[in-house]
Length: 193
Image (cartoon, rainbow, N blue to C red):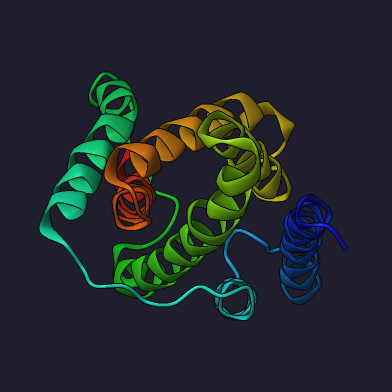
């Protein structure tokens, strides 16, 4: 097997693995996919396991990518915050007492998604096809991954967020910045959407 065939196969296997982890999440959650903590945590564990099998290892936390992620997360919440401030009603979906547990699950899922998408898959695509292809493919995968949760109407937004997170990956050189931005945006959604 040539190097390019092996690299293409690796990318394909990562995408198939990503799809299978989502099927697992949907099977566990049933009709409650956006609110099922067991499904979300199982999904996150499966993503991290897939990333580890593909060669991902925990790196050292660095300050600059952390700061880039905080700023990147802030950018992601500007539009929803503006809309929330100008809304006539507040749209809380859950009682406030659920926030800590919900935020923990959402944070774990967001980090796991970034480890696989902007970590392992991004690196595999970047090595063969370059950074723009890596941003594009991981953004498309990110958008499609969220269709079962939020529907096709949310796909343009999820694609835009995916491209933003891919840009943070390019800027920072690692997964920390997009992971921090993703967690901040998801946690902010508690109050803003």
